[in-house]
Length: 105
Image (cartoon, rainbow, N blue to C red):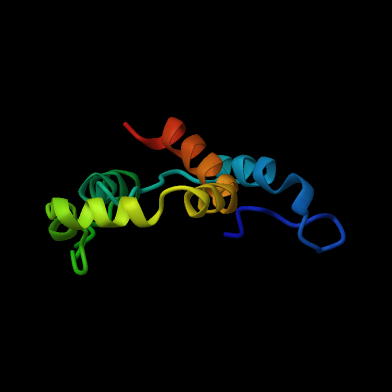
């Protein structure tokens, strides 16, 4: 699903991309979040009657437990680079926040 949507002319409606993406959430019965895939699998089974087997590879748990690595990453993304990343991901973060408010339980 292209969450940003297309205008009536078939072109991307960039001006209303976040609003269109939020409206597209109305079409979804469930949404999963990568930090709790087991919950998503349970909701999927309840909703669709099909059991999912969720694998876990390349997970962040080992990285998140390394406090020195976390400090290096935070230090690397401090200042202007952090501001640039926040600006570049503003639409994604707005959609994520809306999805969380509707689907995270």
